[in-house]
Length: 196
Image 1: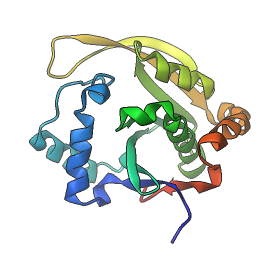
Image 2 (image 1 turned 135 degrees about the horizontal axis):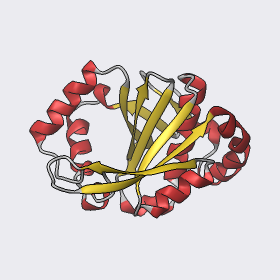
Image 3 (image 1 turned 30 degrees about the horizontal axis):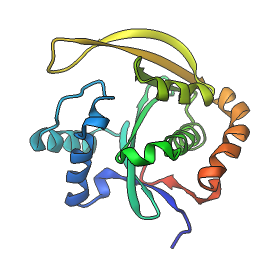
């Protein structure tokens, strides 16, 4: 038994009830409106998505628990050049003010650079999502470019801001970030990503 109060569970190892809840949470308006593909995910589409994860060793999705209660989802994809792209969302609007997004970001950066030995971490955020863009900046991410992407199932494009951070940059800012994270949760109480 561990003492962690934040844990990361690979969604492929969860029961069917949680897998369905993840689809429902992803379809909540406050979640999907911040997504590149903001359409409502059907059960069939979700099953195909889960099946594709089983075949893809470079892509992972985790349900994040706080004291055994689910609070969000973190995902990442690894690319050939030792880079990793990540994203996350909270499943309860009320906890967005608590700072769990910062805990997720802290955890994924440590996982990427120290467990997976990545050289660069990338995030692509909708330009109107200023809150998350500013969070990335506080963590040391640098703006690389704004680019447009065609949205699946819609005849529209969205602008994304790409931000990047290297391991060296993360190591420099990590001590200051840990001081802030400790206000939310002690860093030694943050668990590791399981089954990566």
